[in-house]
Length: 330
Image (cartoon, rainbow, N blue to C red):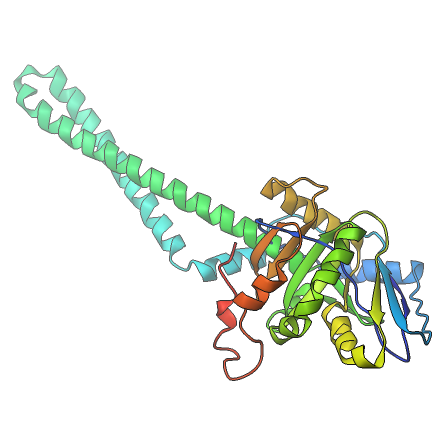
């Protein structure tokens, strides 16, 4: 169970930060409720949450998480169902491809037996060219539809694998505030998450670079999930001066999520880096759409200015209408 140590004035809760770079995919998998509850209960008996509040001119937030067994990598039923919903006619196409393959193969078999019989009977020699033509058509048709079936099946497997990784991501846990723990999936339709993963210096620099865009990012429903991969604890300092009070409150809101169960996050992140051909030590970022699907990723610092330019506001006249304009799914 993750623990959070915060030094804040009054009752202010603090945020957290981690990861970064551009061009890679993510996906999702299944998590058994019984196993999840068991693991949570186990961790609750082994870890304690401590918070210290102190009146001062600056706030420091430090976060870390304990290890927990990684989730199963099996393809979930949910991922398969989502794949069917996203491509409703794929199964129909694959059925007809198989039917045409069987028809071509059967026709080729019949044509082959007729050709053998014609070759064995000199009186039927004139029929041979026509039989060869029919045999060629049958073989060509079977080959073409076999290729189409192979391509469709490959696309299906790729899509299911991507959706499975997205399901795995949606089952990872986040801490909101001091006591509330939620899965990533609970923020679908509510927030656009940006996952920052890397060393503590990388996270702190990402935190610093996001400051000029704080208000615009919040207006677009962006929340940052920082994940430190070097085993150290990042500390965020906020200016608690009266003139900076409003900005500080918004900064804390933007960075208030904290990942817990480090082993699960690390396993998922390592898999994404491996699939993308990215070095395990590279700092990366991952941007999610409002529906929880991956819209962008890369190595390096998150492009905060690009998020502001590309994402529509999360509230206002166009709320709902522009929810699907988050960007192309990777």
